[in-house]
Image 1: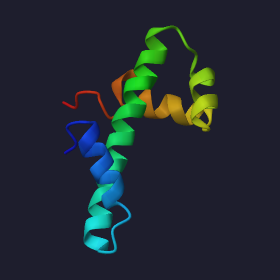
Image 2: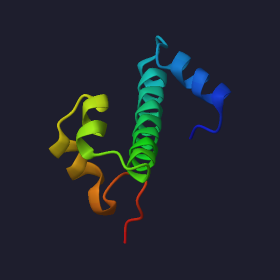
Image 3: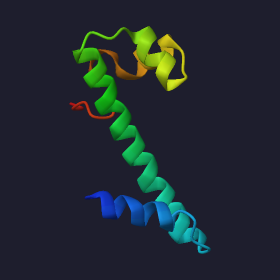
Image 4: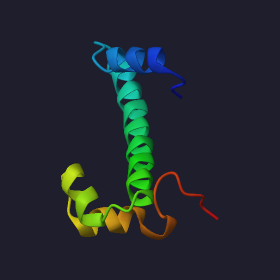
Amino acid sequence: MLTGMADTAAVATAAADDDPAVGLRAVRSLRVLVERLEALQVDNARGRGWTWEQIAQLLGVSRQAVHKKYARGRGPLRRRD
């Protein structure tokens, strides 16, 4: 898993590697990072009083899609029992 900016840069570089195994592992790591960052920022926005519509507009998705993904603790950073 990624631990810092240098790791992130290395993974981004690896995503363009000629070896598909290296590239695809890097893409998977980047996907996980993006999901976590999105969840963090959605939580940040909601904590500051942003509406689902405002968040959705900036993410380029529908209000319903972002609400379904993150409302009531269902997002990627939420604890699963």
